[in-house]
Length: 61
Image 1 (cartoon, rainbow, N blue to C red):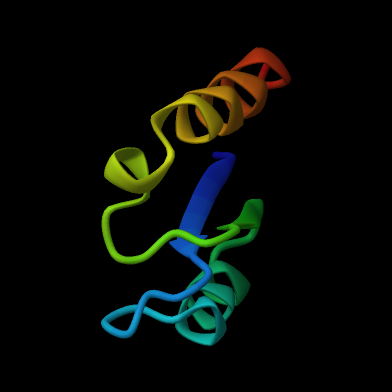
Image 2: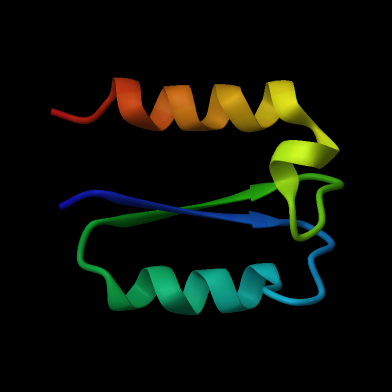
């Protein structure tokens, strides 16, 4: 099952390195780091967050 692991670039709680480690445990995971976002990327840049999710969902079978 495809999975998206999205991390905020400046998230101190779950930094991008932790997101990459999580994605490595999943066989079909993709990691995306949202620039200038912290722990709540949907609040820091809602349009970018929505585009990222929509792009991921649009390429799934």
